[in-house]
Length: 195
Image (cartoon, rainbow, N blue to C red; front, side, top):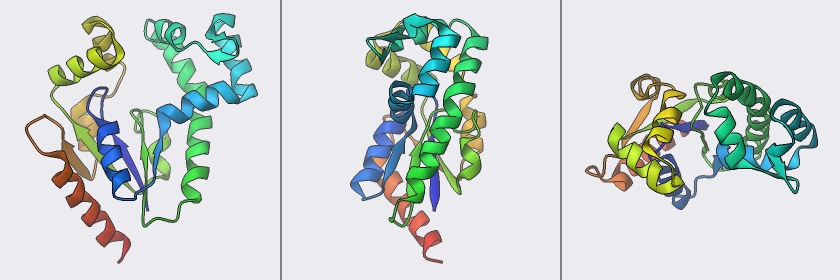
């Protein structure tokens, strides 16, 4: 079974994914994979240079700060970036998932529903957190301003809509314990797989 794990920026998707990994579930991290692909795929690198200029790479490595400053300031450029990167990442994820032998595998991705990535998955886990907590976590993690975090949030699907599309929900509000929630979902998925 192929499971999608998603949530808005700062919701704690990666933390939840790590808990699944400790249970022996393989996890594909879409953001990490996208960065790897943008650094390794020569066709994609050429397309990114054409779209965003030579500054998008420094010594053949993706200049993430420059790219972020360009795309988060212009929704058309963000859309163009997604059109270039999503198909390559989706194909990479599908290839990776087809090689997994565990009862189920997880694809962790912020933009699961915003891209077509959800179409090849069976069930979805959403990680929800209050917006103020998401903002403070992201400011701390990425060393960016509140305004920059809000700009990124505005480019993502609304949390309620995203969570509404999910089959399972993890509340990551720093009040509810994460591990029991993940264990319960893990058991539910295992029971579905064994049917």
